[in-house]
Length: 276
Image 1 (tube, one colour):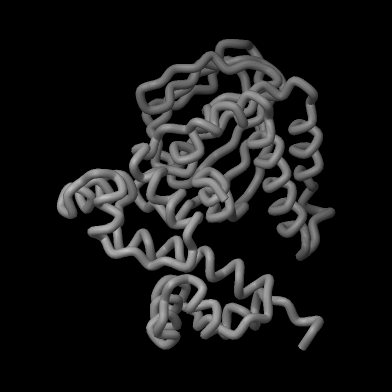
Image 2 (cartoon, one colour; image 1 turned 45 degrees about the vertical axis):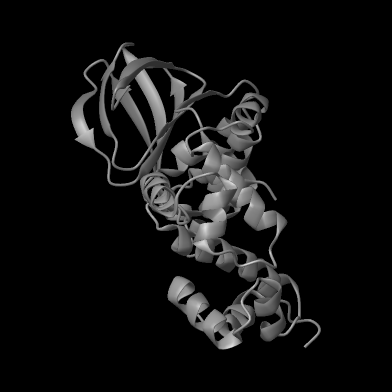
């Protein structure tokens, strides 16, 4: 597993709501701070959009992703506009001080050249009188399908394979941890691996990930443990040992701090059960 795959697997998405807007030349907004992530699909028309320090001329057939907490301004260019707005929350908890778009190095604007995304968006627009208690599940899954289409796009894949918003030394450490899951390295070992002093490594991690090196290592170990707990019937003590934590009780405490669940509770909720 490379660092990009790890970030994608740690990505958590929660659909909030979807609305379609029929707008005209008067549509505009100045310096609005977003509380959630927003995705716009432009069905018709064009408009000018500013996201923080970047400007875009948006048009029909484009998907625009607006990160949470970004400052946006916009105004219509065409006489008529038709767009669908999807609000959602997205987070990669491994890195607390950067947005998921930064971590995956994704652009804000996409071209829907095959109209695949538009078809999914239209499926999500269910009239209120036809809505049931289960519609939210359909819309959540549809949002994930849209993100898959965007992430799986050829140009995005090429960009993501060499994404650079994390320092190369962080990538080196992530690769080392995934290549040697049985090790629980000390900070001194990681510092030597990337030719830094302990103090410089700590500063680098806090700046790049918002976490101290040890906390980051623990976060990766927890992500590895989740997969083992959910996909195997290995004893928890064995999983702990395989991840370089010899004290299973310490492993369980660490796991609960990070997930609010004990390893056993996590396995009961998300693990295999047909062999029970």
